[in-house]
Picture (cartoon, rainbow, N blue to C red):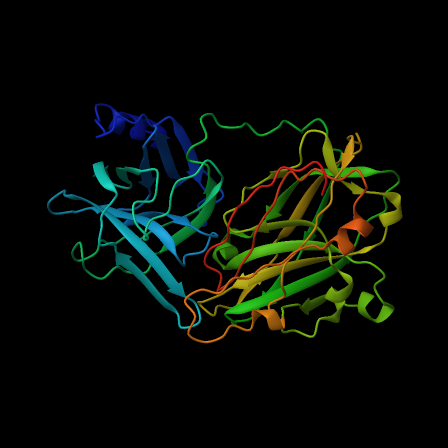
Length: 419
């Protein structure tokens, strides 16, 4: 019997405390397989006040789902649960995850106020299914609210149970990240662009050995092919080696401008904030990217594409991958990015603007003893007047990225005719 059928049969006759129908479903990426085997399933529904979720994971041990501020473990609001082998008791817990990757200290603490309520739970020979409900709004400072936006979701499981509800929790055997909009009334289907695609571009790290360092930035320099006419990229996709998924924090692709000859000969090089990678000084025009938890395909709006023109023929491109490697493993990677191009040129060209503060900037020198420290970056009018047309631009997407010290960022949209 398929996972979906089994899950539906299990759901018959369940009565939620708030009467939420599970009308939405996603299959979560499983880092261990490219096939549909051992799929992880998340189902959910919501009403005016509550969200109800059902987790179906290929384990007989514990399992989790968490709302993360950025796709990482730290500061995540976690639903933790399992079914006791002896008593068949369903354990549902509200927990909060803190992770200090410098000290390798990870704590999944039990919240003082338990806001996840158990609806049901069961398991068969291979799968555990848990169903729980919680209010939409954060109930205390250890919870995160559900929002009508794409939210970073982390998930994990282990084959063994804790010794008790308050006992030691073994480190996950599998984990992953994705994004979910829990409060969208109807899902937005992916656009059908199959008939538009006429060319694909791939930029990969090319089977490079990644050494056993906790944090590493690796770059591969390559050249764009010959463009006989104008093309536009209408979608991009990460190419991720499944065996290395848990180590890949993010990937970025840049086009280089006026790259000196001595740097143009480089192939593979370290390119982190503290590396002497002078190549990156000339490679700041970002044309694509992916971070953990992002969708598998990033589509441009229906009348928009990122241009690739004959004038760009032979220009150098850098693919940069940030590896987060707390296991200090040594492995070979061939991940990268794919761009789907069309010669059916759309009405508008797209581009990117990056604004922020470099990690070594003096403005990030934090005085000791502060509970909070606010960071703000901006793109000044001196920049925008030289880059942007007088009639202004339309912003259709944005992304905020932080690292180990970043905890909270506001998501504020301003509607304006001119930028």
